Amino acid sequence: NVNVLAIDLYDGNVATNNDEAVKFMQSVTNERAVTIINGAKDYAGSTAVFATMGWCFGGSWSNQAAIELGDKCIACVMYYGMPEQNLERLAKLKAPVLGIFAMQDKRITPEVAAKFESDLKSLNIPASINEFDAVHGFANPSNPKHDAAATKDAKEKTYAFLKEKMK
Image 1 (tube, one colour):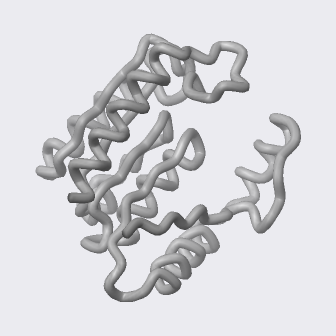
Image 2 (cartoon, one colour; image 1 turned 30 degrees about the vertical axis):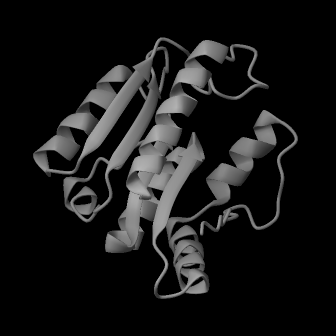
């Protein structure tokens, strides 16, 4: 039995353009987001286990949620989200990670992804870091540079990862 919770870090706001999206992302405070994550954990109940997944800003928060959930989290999927770079905080992560990154990303560069992979390895956190020769947001069909082949490959990797972890 699988239940899906889509947590809302924007308090019901929906962006209709990039400027609004940036405004909403910048309005999210760590304290509020962590409160929302813990509210979702409480809502799900004490016996629930979690897998986190997100894209871009949500990919970063997938990583943060997996850290917050501790041993209640069994899998973390991040699509081109900024990973946690503080090793002390990252060490609290108990879930294996599937990282989907874009080699042409100007902000979350291949170097950022490589450091994340190295940090996870140094902490003995299982990880599969995948880099696609594509731009940030390549899996978004509304992106003018949407890469259908990379999206299909990333999606298959995601399904296989989650299926394995949710046995």
